[in-house]
Amino acid sequence: MVTTLVVHTGAHDLAGSVDDGESWRAAAARTVAAVGGAPVARDLSGAVLHFDLDPEHVVSLRAMTRDDLPLMTRWRASDAVRRWWEQGREQTPEQIHDMYAERVDGRSPTRMWVVEVDARPAGFVQDYRISDYPDHAVLVPDPGAVGVDYAIGEDAWRGRGLGAAVLWSWAEHARSRYPDVTTYFAAPDYRNTASLRVLAKAGFEPGTWFDQPQADGSTHTVVGCSLDVRRVLA
Image 1 (cartoon, rainbow, N blue to C red):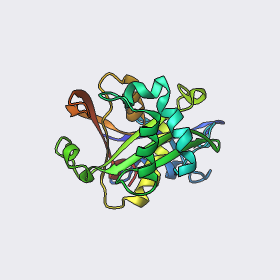
Image 2 (tube, helix red, strand yellow; image 1 turned 90 degrees about the horizontal axis):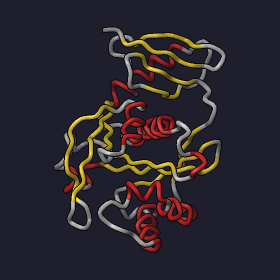
Image 3 (spheres, rainbow, N blue to C red; image 1 turned 30 degrees about the vertical axis):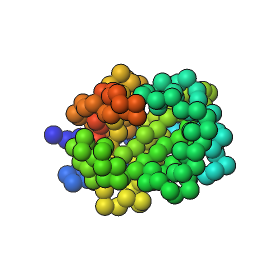
């Protein structure tokens, strides 16, 4: 079965297909070779893969620093983020600050990134080798995967369809940092349909549901979603 794709350039659409052994990213780049530029995932969840060339908003990532901690603390305190990020425990602003300070200082296996849209902070991404967290590694299908979590922190950018572009920017960035990894993995709450949809658009496929232990001893059910790095990104 031939996988087809469309790259939307604004002025017109360019159609293409994925050759045997070719990644989706490489096929999209080849489709626009005469035009130039780097296509960004719009929606990779259907029979036809959709990419954007020169999207309306430029999404990029940079390493989080201690200067970002007040901003990060504010984002984590917002109702939209707390709904999915504080299940099983409530954290004070001081606890949130100290947790992310440990990460940006390199005292934790988790690395933090600030999402910028048109050079303005809009949210964050965190990633980690799942094998660095043994209690979590035993629950997932590929303990060698890199785990990723993300959130749009600024209300002005929430609900604007940026999620796939955020994850695509992160995935391209991760390729050079984790050259040996073949799977990226995310596990949103099964009720978080918006996040599941964003992950699908970015090339993740839903898999096993499992119960994830929480800090207070409770569990909540999540959906394991995996991205095949070789197929999607090469």
